[in-house]
Length: 210
Image: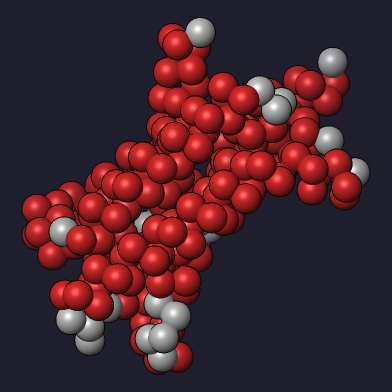
């Protein structure tokens, strides 16, 4: 039992880690909080992670019910979700995502910094469409099993804890990783995410046509 739960945790953690890409938060966090003090940055990082946790746990516990209400089957959502994740992966591989996230951070500065924790940090960086879709897919595969759902929530907590650490150490992380290494790492993670997306599509298609 414990081994199965740990396996579910690892699978969920790897999926969410690849989708969220915590190390990529450092430059965006620094740009979005450029005018804030250290204490204000700590508060923003904490609130952003809290908002993201509430969004993703809400998706984990309420996503299946929402799909039922809308009449969407899980296999159909697997196919659609896999295609969405593949689109995000292609942006990562082609280098489009970095530029888009930088534009999002600049937009947040232009519009004012009152809600930076919610936008752009919690949404769309930590709990964006890709993370919500991945959470819904994993929760759907759990089929209400408490142990698997607990593993998913634990994975969400672990990934967001990494996001908080990266935000708190953003300057050091950016200096350590560097822009070139960050680009290479994003492309590698994009390839992994594309593979996961294809697997989701294959599983959904197999269920639809079986």
